[in-house]
Image (cartoon, rainbow, N blue to C red):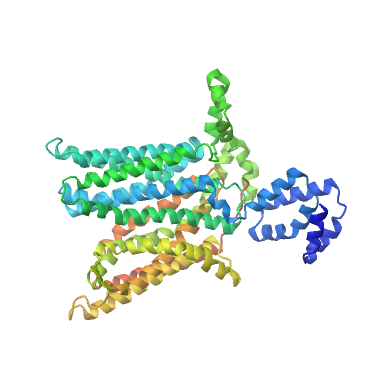
Length: 576
């Protein structure tokens, strides 16, 4: 203690810390407990106040603490360290995300080729199959969120999802392996559609709850910077899997083209990756931090009280750790710090008041998501209209002695590659530099920047269309494919400043009994964007440049609307 006291006095102290230091020289244990409890209570305040309090209280807290209190304080300080991102359970879940994203995107990239080229279905119907797959992957997310938050818990829901999408991959493998002389043409299509639906349902349930489960592994208290880096790491892993699936599945099909089993080879790889992903998830069961919803917890308690055999199971460390999750439903009434209309809650003391408060919590957050489907509509529209633009550009690449031609449908994969490259750049260099100049990058501010960037991306694409239309009738492919690079750079920045802060916002601004549902609603906004894309395709313009300028104008209106909505939003911090 003397050594710590001497080392501390050698450091320059702020006026607040000098006052605390002088007044703490002979502090009583009661006052020390008061400081400790105040420090814990302050964890529910704003991030700026929390950081300021930690800076001013470290001198006091270090001076007099019991060994247990010192350990608690050191654990809390360790939560500021980026080394937390290397915890075994986080690393395992990141690899699970890579394999799961690879499987999901691989199925999406191979479905059109299989149904159109292998089964002989028309291009329109094959495109419809792909659209249904994408919509299922996003629209069924709230089911997974409700199962995770209220019934089965996050771990059990993810395990169910792993089993479901692995079984679906096996069924699709069977549909691609049998020949028509073994099964009828209709039976093969039915097998493939059934496997596709099972896989899409599994992906839909795990997509919204997986980031919540990853975040839960690091405990309730994290600094905003570390929290943002964690979601950036998770999204980076997802995009690594997306990139591998975007380029890997068509390559496997191309390599196996001389053989009759080219699609079965691709689905065999997808099924193998699904099995590996499920194995890795189950491997970390003993180190995961589990949270069980109240309904399942009550069921476990009742089973343990009426079944002697089950009592032994419920006394195991894993089940005990699971039961330390949520409190009972009655305690959820205190699971908030501020509401829009506090006076309305004094009338409701029953369980219906908890449902009422939960609905208010849900609506308070979901109003932020209202303008986002337009963003996702323009984002997903790049897979069609930007590909059409690429067909009119010179796609021959001459790099030293290496000459090759890029296929038009491979160009959108540039976005996945840029996301993988840009996430570390923005997380560790650009964002800290922006905050150094005094501009705090909160999640909603990032979302506004992301919407503005996609607006600029469509303006850049519209300008390129003007250039193409001026020379299109004189000479074909007058401009290089590199002229699309600015719009892909802008849409990559838009994705980074929208997807990652969106996951962070959904987690931090919702109570723990609604986190899966709110995150699922974030994915539903992306599904609605896919539906809007179908509507966009029905609108015909005389020139493509006019269409893109109209898209940019629509995005400008919704960006302004979103900015006004975010200005009226007050951040909240919930008790853990």
